[in-house]
Length: 120
Image (cartoon, rainbow, N blue to C red; front, side):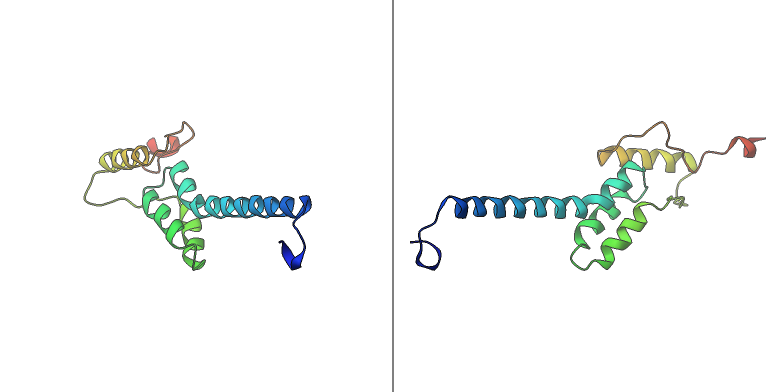
């Protein structure tokens, strides 16, 4: 017995398969968007990449924290921990990014490095 007392046909089963695929695609998109701030922060070598990643996952249900994490992921992160010298801070940030699975890219410009104009 099918829906409304009629037997299920080929198109009914095809509809169920289409709905399941659509649900899977929506869930995949949902998971992609939730992890987006963390992936952006890791790609940009953000010193607080792990905090951005956690806030992106945890803040998605309330939307506002997720938006904050998304904006924070694009922040340049020039804050320096005063307990460490600039070289130690740079090494700590690079070690943290590597631990999170990111790669240091050639176009990455460390905010602690001086520009050519400031060196002279």
